[in-house]
Image (cartoon, rainbow, N blue to C red):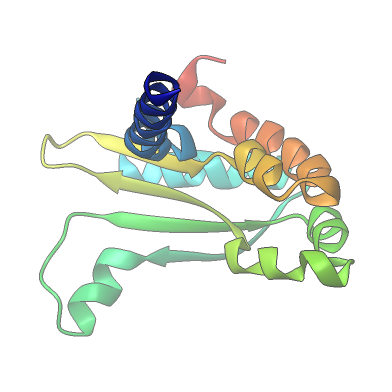
Length: 156
């Protein structure tokens, strides 16, 4: 009995440690872009608009940080994306409105110290699975759309 309890505790601890260490790479995907920052932003914007998405804003985060007293950073651009039907279907139920904290969908384009351009997207499908129900259905579609927006960088 004692060995079973110890085995259970060790197994649970190893599972928690594995989830804890792998979650960042599962939740956010980073991809090197074959283009520069401005070209990458333009390509994502064009791909999203061609798919019927709206770009409510493109925010140069690095400039905002510097303007408000932070230090100088290389380009970090946030592309905020919205598709009205997906947004409506995600938020139409009272119980799902808390997901609005993750809206609009954002793709980040940035330059690292190596001089190369990268982009990052949240795993919308996994996010949906965590919430389940209607949110899971919509986020599966959002994830597929996002993959299309960045396919030029992922060879998909």
